[in-house]
Image 1 (tube, helix red, strand yellow):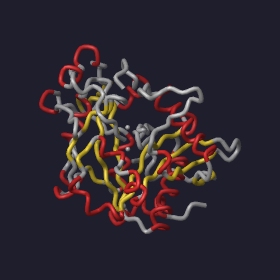
Image 2 (cartoon, helix red, strand yellow; image 1 turned 135 degrees about the vertical axis):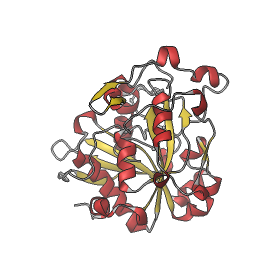
Image 3 (cartoon, rainbow, N blue to C red; image 1 turned 30 degrees about the vertical axis):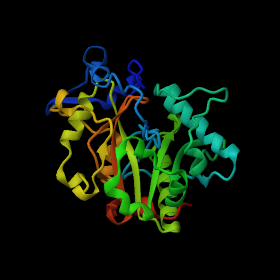
Image 4 (tube, rainbow, N blue to C red; image 1 turned 45 degrees about the vertical axis):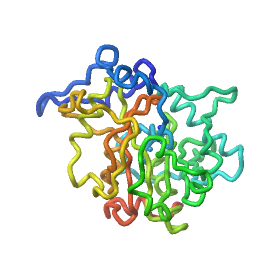
Length: 315
């Protein structure tokens, strides 16, 4: 999946407190006064990072994918859907990730002369690219870590944030997705559907059954929004207890105001509509200053209403 002053100010429209049925107002950015996380985690500010599954971001949350609600009505535009075949194409994805996560959203990523978001997982992952048909530039991306590559690497990305012991028996049929993002000028349903179509076809082609990733919640207010969102999840939105994971750096839910009436970010709302389940309480990712929920999607659980968009062969 940033301990930076309010890196998500551009996303304030996602943080809504409903004061009554007819009146709503943005959450006040309480980061300066009410961000208690440094106090709680003063010895672990540089905790292992982790990452996410829907319309915007990715493995390192860059499962920070914050894009408009797209399920249901979006029509697939003629974007070009491909998989990176050589290093230059991977760099195109890394350059987009850096622009979105570091420059736009303020994530604490290592800087480099080329302006690329690079980590050790990239070499082991397959990189999904969506290109603008007019300019051919990459405007959307996901990366996928398949089971045998995870074994070769020695771990999943999400294991930096969660204890995944209860999911070990699922690993042979499980891929990890993340680092998903969309260029700010192309955050439409068409791009997201193109990404999902690419992922769906990949899963079917290689006979994988489960996607795992970290869905990120912005913490510009110090964590109250994230705590409230987690507390609002119903039993039907949670994975069975035997598939639960456990945060290594948990958000201190008992010390936050978790009773606010909030709207889920588009990423999580979209995943839940698609049929994904939440497998964990929120973990804090200090590099991105987000709360991450481990999210699992089984192809067999996809909502029939959206199965066509997700599983139909990309054109």
